[in-house]
Image (cartoon, rainbow, N blue to C red):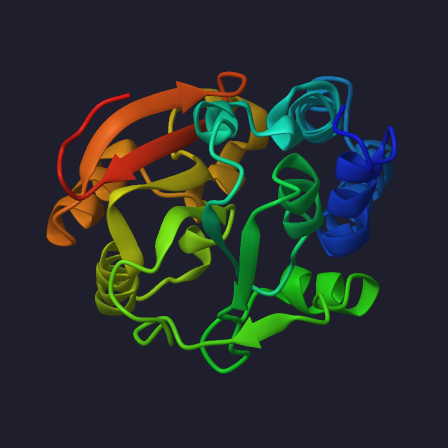
Length: 254
């Protein structure tokens, strides 16, 4: 568990910001159990099986969430360890309205120059969970409000750019492509971009069932990176459910 995080912070945040899903699940289970009282013995197994399925998938999703966000080394950012030797690096950390990583990155690179950007726009990024998260976690005081297609920095400004569980909130393809073109522009030739996301894959389907549709497939991400002329230097897995793509514009390797 990363320093500065409480033992159950990840799973409690998911419950807090997405409570409506769990309320719907609970109501669905109650309706199914009540309906079973009016069915014959030949058919009673259907609502019982359906309610058991809903309960099981809900518990599995919560356990996986706890495993990913609270038990794993996700928030220790092990993929950044290769940059730790240079204590004077310039870092850009970008979020989509919910920032739980900037302070952790600042602690990891105490002598670095950290810039924080928030591209959340309620007109375009309409997730209710983000709105709730912002009430509990206000932006850092030095956070700069930005647009996804115009980052207010000169070319090649940063050695490290981090985008953690944020890029998938850009649902419009054109906007997403423009965003990554901007990331490529503000990253130095020797710099790296670190994009951490869940993928729309088998593992996340088993964990979150239809909720995995909120994520993008690996192929989708690869196409986005190509459109911004970014090369995948490495893909690192933090648990089977989370990938961090390490990108560079010049094809260098670690």
